[in-house]
Length: 162
Image 1 (cartoon, helix red, strand yellow):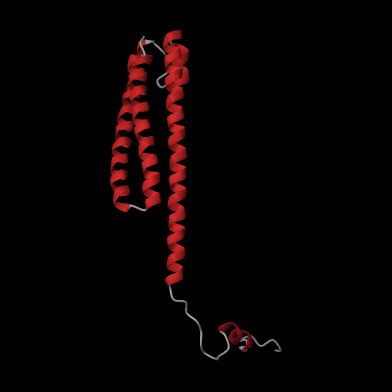
Image 2 (image 1 turned 30 degrees about the horizontal axis):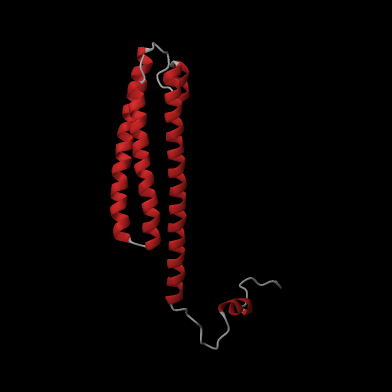
């Protein structure tokens, strides 16, 4: 019962997540510069990483399934914690280390994405404020009573004295 394929898949996932983190930091700089062409190119590159991560994650799931079959386990799916409990000490330490590195990369990616989302939101707010400044405001120049005053003075259809 070997975890070699699982370890290989986790190492690939870590490498891909590190690359995605680099793209996220580059995206922050691109958003700050408002370079739409570079942002489009970066988003295309980011999609390649996302697809690669999905493929490697499928490999990891297959490796976990094979590991569970070899170990005659009743489980069909297992978490990393479940697998760590099933292996010997040397593999346990390696899997725990890889899990910790992958989790830190995922957390860093999440934080970078939150920052990028906030930057984009602030850019959109700035654009809306700028557009509001350029839109002409309609002002009423007529000397009539406002519509609300007309409605208050209008006679009611209901005859209250009847």
